[in-house]
Length: 296
Image 1 (cartoon, one colour):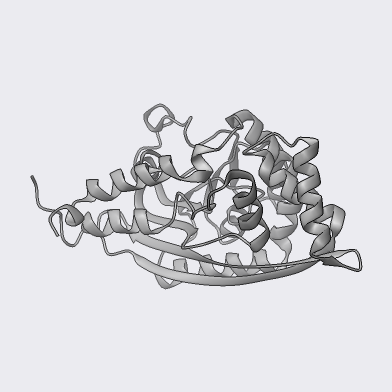
Image 2: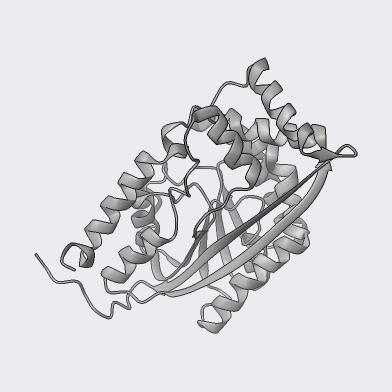
């Protein structure tokens, strides 16, 4: 138990797992290209804010914050990777003063317009979390609640520790817990790269065990979701190409392989897909350390 009880062990294992993950090793695009990628996806993400799935995710977060006594008007909130405002808008409607950090111009555009339309207390900042200097911004220990949900902005030990340092009271962190891919992504990845796609390099097990061995006892809840759909063949091919573009050049041969895969599994011009995944949601207070780890 010696090594397993050390917070540093889990940080190092997280970093090693992230570095060796197929998704990390094979990433081909720069940060600027990926931000442009998210700009293109902004319209569909914006629809999620007002859709049934978006409302369900919002309610999950609100329920946790309410039960933990952390849903109070006037609280200063930092939402890292705010996207089109999935949580920033709903928290602002509860009377919280929200700073929304988001690198995608198009995502932020939707969020700003909606906040302006409703006259909500949301300050929008276009930046990655990696670029933020806590001391220069005056953000170290500044926020009552720091939130990061399913964002690539907080996906490794360095960004996670900085996430905690921005809070003076509460943190809420949400990430994948276990497998996340559907059959098409798994099988095509195996075809192209001759290896399994692997799990999420920022699975919630790593930050949870870091917090646990640091003496925290975060509230941890799991939310399982099954998604199904049927889309035109062309749309399915386009979405798969968009995903694999992050890891390889989409040559005519690659495009042909993806299209053949989709057409062979389609009927009447529609491709039907299904995926099941689980999210882990953690809440903790930064000053509530119950069992400080032993000093070495």
